Image (tube, rainbow, N blue to C red; front, side, top):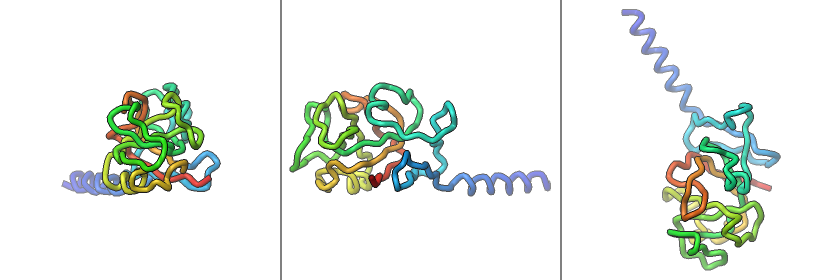
Length: 165
């Protein structure tokens, strides 16, 4: 009987420990990256070192199918297909943003798409809601998938934050 009690106590302790927020150090940025859902694996899988990928690395498949951080400047909004990209205000789409390695990028071959999967993300990142977010640096934590007919992140985005330059 005491073994069962001990097992329950250990499982309860593990449950509470696993609910902590993960913090990922930023490559020289002044702001740490935090996952929105605690306990996520933030390592790059090979060396165990924490890493934030550029848009170019992410687009070219350097990340594989792992869950990773990618950072970029918000350069546009989009809906349904990259051909519908909006590069200048006024922005009307609030379902996705486009990230690039440099502010002001308008080449669809140099951007990735980020689906704004919930109201909180739309309120914080959408250019339709916040046109002042254009050319601001942000990071997202998820897996590489096709979205809007280009590579990006959709549905399983587990973390996001602003990066101060």
